[in-house]
Image (cartoon, rainbow, N blue to C red):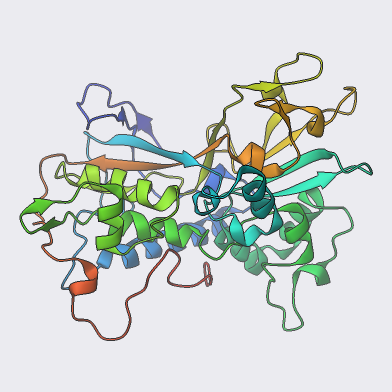
Length: 375
């Protein structure tokens, strides 16, 4: 794909100019190279179909400002909008410090900010390694369908050389998302809300500008509660929605930047200390995903050092839980907006719950299930 800068074009507030790219397909998350060209095309088709489905909206609530960049090119005024949030589950933040760390580590189902982790300890109980992932399950479901040998290879690389094919597939041949190796090594996300489908749906739903009683909604909580997308108590969903909506209020068309995915933004180590005075940031490594698009990270001290992760201190407390590290991780996705001040889509004057519709409205991210790309 040919790319040139559009830095001469003025873009929206708090954005950076997007490259002018003739998008011919959506790349895999992290620009991963696990798939051949035909398989990459299948992934691209799933992302495109998911965008079309999310962007369709309804007759009562059209989502005319959300667009599929594979079908409608991004204009020259396109701008990138990184959206970041803290990886630690906000739903646990009100609990006492020790309790919230322990609870967050106790189950991947509590790790609901599109970042999950597993902890490895030595014989004394000290932490030696924490592995973090933000890879959605849909990509791994596609791997299981079209490249099962590659799936097995990756599991042996990321989890254990001892992984067997029968550990990953059920009696009927279906890939098991919550297989024991994924549970032990955090190969990819498993919490039910942590999906790429959820990311796309939230982004599309949040492009709806709302004017209720003559007042345009702008706040994170009023937007998510009125729009009924995502989970209001999380760090991620309300913030993603509000940032996307702020772009839509500039009468722009909005989408997600290629490659569509959730990524690690950075680890903040202010207030950290190591036994030998070395930089605690040096032990944070991205181990999967292209530069700028990391989808897997590991915090681990090399074996030639005379200490382990559990000897490092954060705000004078030793690291006894992976959740202590998650407190200092920022996650991100990247929005893309263009055609500023051109949209003619009128604001919606009601909340979703007020629309008459058959059946119950879907609430929370990932409403379409976890089927992933079906080829």
